[in-house]
Amino acid sequence: MSYMKFTPVVLRNLFSKPATRLYPFVKRTPYKNTRGSVGIDINSCIYCGICQKKCPTDAIVVAKADRLWQIDRMRCIACSACVDACPKKCLTMDGAYAPSATAKNADRFVGAEKPKATPA
Image (cartoon, rainbow, N blue to C red):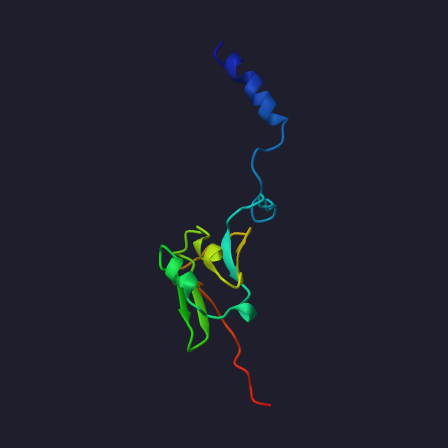
């Protein structure tokens, strides 16, 4: 008689849609104000280093002499402190998450380097 108790549950699950998505094929659209990953518009960056100083996990490295901006995705906690502190507003919080790494050092550092002007 105990099988009679779970029969309605089995029938309901048999004829309903699945509760999950097929993730690699069906991606969920991010919600408004989702903090996924930090993005940069390197052409408007002045390499002041304020974002590096405001980052609580020291995930950002800025080298003004080398014109280099780099973020360690494994250390970033997506707190948006760097985005709020940027005076030129060249940093943004993208709604999409960074792709997951398959190895410890694979795509860990994501950087942007402004191309140096060539003499004409």
